[in-house]
Amino acid sequence: MIERQHTNARMSRIVKHKGVVYLCGQVGSGATVAEQTRDCLSRVESLLDEAGSSKAHILQATIWLAHMSDFDAVNAVWDAWVPEGRAPARACGEARLAGSDLLVEIIVTAALTQGDKT
Image (tube, rainbow, N blue to C red; front, side, top):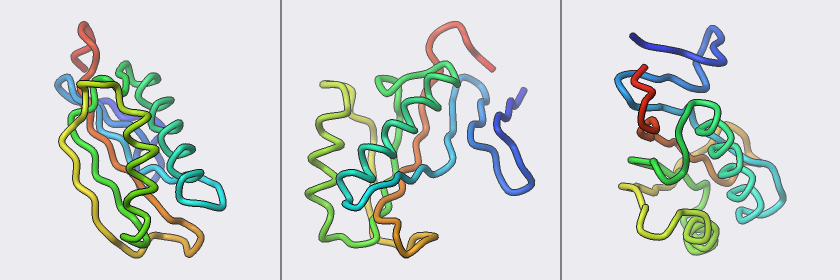
């Protein structure tokens, strides 16, 4: 069974299937890439919690940056956020994001915590 949450005509914010949670891309607000990354990761964490998972269960993350020159700043926030010993598979690249004010977008796939096999 596939479960979709916060669904509209274009997308679902959360999709759960066979023990895996897929989140739509998350962006954050703020003037700097560090502020946007912190806000973005807070949103990821909230959605994972709602879905029955956590940042300790992230399997894979894809990070899109408007400017690769922000790589170190994003990594500083990311490294402080990811639980030690729980780093997921990760990719990071540069892309034109949906808005000119957006500096970072993060897409996450995570395992559900035990017991929820939607």
